[in-house]
Length: 372
Image 1 (cartoon, rainbow, N blue to C red):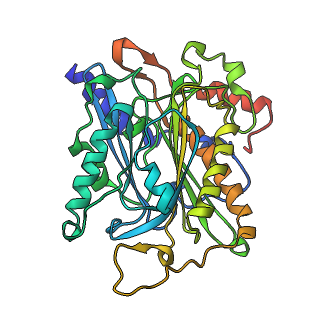
Image 2: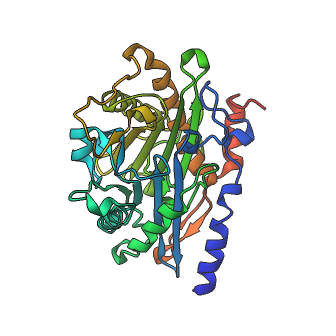
C-alpha cells in the first residue's frame, strides 16, 4: 500500500503538466487571459495545496487562497458570498454577509474536515504578527465539497498541520490543477474532477482590471465544453452523474469593488458554472466567494482616528465587462479541472477515469469549435 501511495503522489505532482483546453485550440470566451491563466494573475493572490494520498482509501487535501501576502486580519479585504444552492458547509458566511470583509485566508477541503480547517485558521491568525494582542474574535472562511466516494471521509484525515502547510506553501504564479489539494478526491460529470483556475484581463479602455477564478469541482450534470454537448456523445457513467456533489468558486479581482458589487460579481460566476452543464441538484452546494485586492479599499483592524473608509468604488455602469469576464473565467476554470486531472482509484477500489480528452477533441472538431 505504501508503494501505491508513493506512485499516486508522484503522479499527482505531474498533474500540472497535462495539456489544458487552450493547448488543444479550445478557446472559451473572447476576452484575453492573464499571463498564467490563473487566479494568481490578480496581483498579490497566492495559492497553496496540501495533497493527502495514503494507502488505498485516503484521497483528500487542502487548498489555501490568500488575497495578498501579509496580515489579512489586520488589513481585511472587501468581500462577498453568493449561495446558488445551500447544500454545504461554508463557514464564515454570516459575518462576511454582515460586514462585507474577509479577515483570514480562504480554505477549501472536504466536508467533514471543515471544523479542523476553521480551528487551524484561528491558530494561524493568533500566531501571526502581533495579532494575539488584539484578537478576541476571528471569522475563519472555509468551504468544502464531499469527496466521500474516493476518500475515507469519515476518517477525517486532514489535520491542522495540513491546513497550515497549504497556507505556508501558498505562492503566486502557476497554480497546480487537477486532483491536487482540496480537489484530490473529487468527481465532476462522472469523471475525475479537482482544482481548476482561469483568468481574464480587461483592455485599458475598460479599466485594465484582472479577474481570476479558482474552482473545486465535485458535481454532475450534462457536460458542455465550449458550447458543445460532449457529455451526450461520451455516454459517461450516469450512476456517478446525478448532479449531487458541490462546486466552490473563488473569485478575485483588482477592481475597486466593495461588498455590494462583489456580490453582483459573484452571482455572475454561476452563469459560467451553468454553461458547463451543471444543473445544481438538490444535494449539490454551489457557493461563490468574491474579494477585491484593491489596496485602497482594505479595511484596517484599528484606526487612531474616527475616519471614513475610502469607498471610491467602480461605478455600477462599468461593471458589465467584469460580469462578462467572470462568466468566462469560471467556465474555463471548471473545464481546466477536468483536463488537468488523471484517473484515480480510491476507497473500496472505486476507479474514476479521467476525461477522455482525445474523444472530446474529436467531438469538438466535428462541431468546428477548435481554433487550430
